[in-house]
Image 1 (tube, helix red, strand yellow):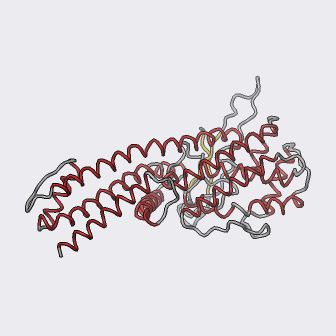
Image 2: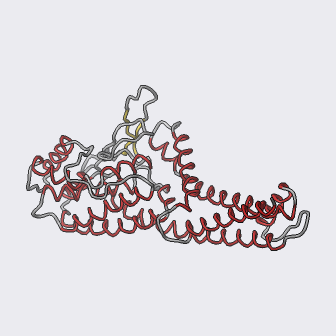
Image 3: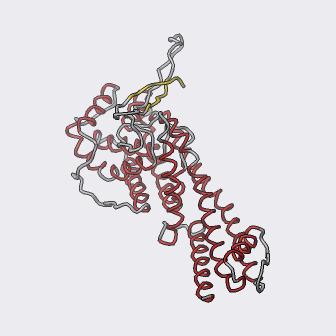
Length: 390
């Protein structure tokens, strides 16, 4: 019996240490050995989502959801500590002849980074091993944090720059309209090129370290996913509406963009169609696309084709990323931007980006820029929308 307990405890320790190495050291998409850590992350996210229901505004929900990632990191460390304590407790049973004494000895050996003998025959090797393994895990965790925050910083830098280009929350047609209004359409190729490189970086980091998905942007109305969706929609619209003059970088940006959304969706275990047909159904309706095209025409954006002519091409591009992007936006409780799907945990309407007023010397100084504030419906799922001054 003691031999069986020892073998079972050793198996727990080996699985725990292997899982730590896969999560913190090995840069690969999660596999079976990381499932305990992934389950902890999902449990933490579910807890925060449930707590966020008490907030009546989107900004309130975002404030509640903000600590998700740090709490998940602590929960992961706690899981590994508990697993090691239980594993070494079972391995010490032949020496201590008591589950409680083995538990105390495992705890003290693990957290005092040394050997504490409680009773029975001394087992210094296990005591020292427990302390050494825990020291290594803590050291790896400390080294793990700079990697996470470096990836987070690279992700958020380009997202913050997008606020002036596409609004907050970001929206693809708004991005094209603003570039036309200030006469910087010639910068769109560089924008698409930057987001192509950004998408490759995020695809690698966020599929390798899924906990990065729990890190939210510092500003509640900014979101890496909504920003990406806006850039992809802008590129798809420009390619569909202006096939002769659209930059080639738009096509490359789209390709890397939907590779990013599909890779992350697949890493989360969702079923993904990596090669959909161009005429497969999408949620965005033609009348929404037509209204956006009319808005672009009103703002003077150069268009070579009508909405009816451009719709099949736009539809063919969007079918590659819409489903994965909408699913991710719902899971991450992203800002309720236009063309970003519904949110199960937000009883609120879609918020369009507010375009800053075009001020000139001598203009009305009372004109102020307003940021949106969504009020969630308390009952009967009626949607209300308010604004506040930023």
